[in-house]
Image (tube, rainbow, N blue to C red; front, side):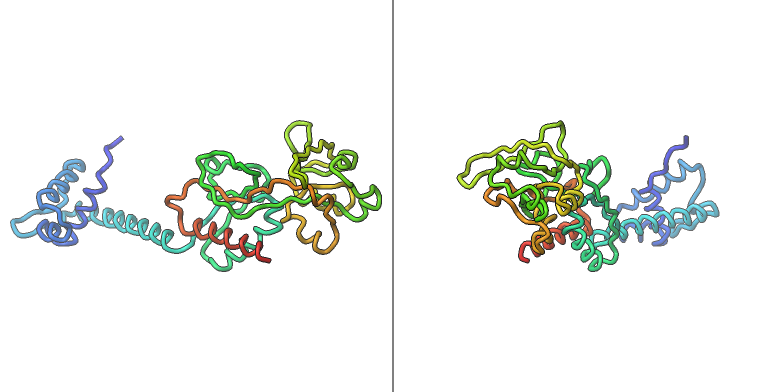
Length: 304
């Protein structure tokens, strides 16, 4: 394999030719003429050809040097174009952003935020994975991942920015109450059909804090367990059981009366909706502005 030419020597060769000689290039670049001369001599030595014809007053390209110069000039142009492309991505939101978001959160709040963001930033493209699985942001090449977790958030090397608190409500349909009766206490929940987000293992326990501050654990065997919040909402609407669901998923059915809250005196530690990303340093404008849009979007929802 032949030795790779020094790209910096090729750049200096172009500049010497552009300025018509070593002295003019030296003044323009702030580099000693001896260094410029050595760079071109090194290129000639590696290539085994004469690139320039030297006289006491000027230099000119040999026939071979003319060919080599055209290729070097193209290389310098591509390098400048690459730099300008990076400068553009650093100055205005553009390019592709890869994002992961849980399905239920996407349907309730995030989808509208993303649509507004894209309308405001026409040069940004989003590759969105709507998934309830926990993606590996670094290994899978995501720029952002939106998650909902109850505190404390686990330690990781990822940067984190909180977006909102996610409150949870025990809900069921009016038809369910008509068929099974309304639970009067946490103990009643264990005796009724339930719907739950899927958990590892076979044990399902809801953990609450009572009105007096006491911890209450409610073991239950869900009739339906799934990792899809929208499926749980639909099952609750059909009267299949009582579900513990985030406010983002039940805001509308609670408002229009399709679902009702039961045992409001039982409180659950709110989850934290947050976005994780590899690092705060070197964020391109498209990623940084999307994070800001998510923060602003959730703040607007809180004020509604």
